[in-house]
Length: 202
Image 1 (spheres, rainbow, N blue to C red):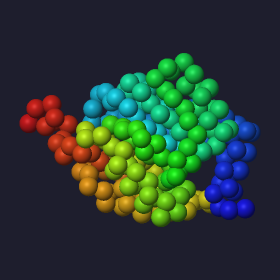
Image 2 (image 1 turned 135 degrees about the vertical axis):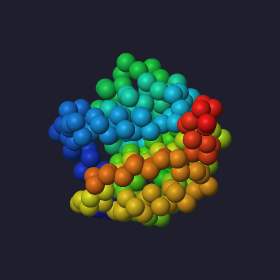
Image 3 (image 1 turned 135 degrees about the horizontal axis):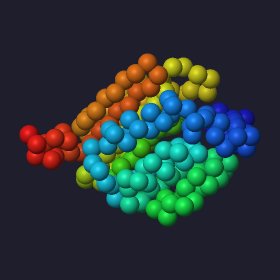
């Protein structure tokens, strides 16, 4: 079994046994992290968000409060069933099965791309391909956000620092970097202005 197939089988079994295997709905750690992700966004509203690796849809539901449309994707059918159930009452959310990097929706443009707890499952060459897809798909006023677990764990294919270095190598401006012992959150934009400058406070 290839590493990709083994990972797929792992998540199928994990979510078949429990639609919330990481306790995303109940842990304060996860609730706080989602709040930080949302607070980091430099605009109140977005037109079209892409969230690959959407998991069971907890962050998706929060992003939907800030976006006119959200394309939430994952590679596991069991995961997508959980995400579809969580977002069933949110008409602005579309759920799709995507295996990255090959099934990135290159025909669409997004002004927000959220990569949360995803890319460290991919080998570095695949991360580089995803980074190129981000650059191609990001709108002229687009925002790219990455939030990832920092400690090592079984199943990790790429270091979080290496993932963020690849994304940081794109021709974007880093607007925010938040580092904790547990996770790293970074945000890049095509617009180099700070939030205060965008609102003409300074």
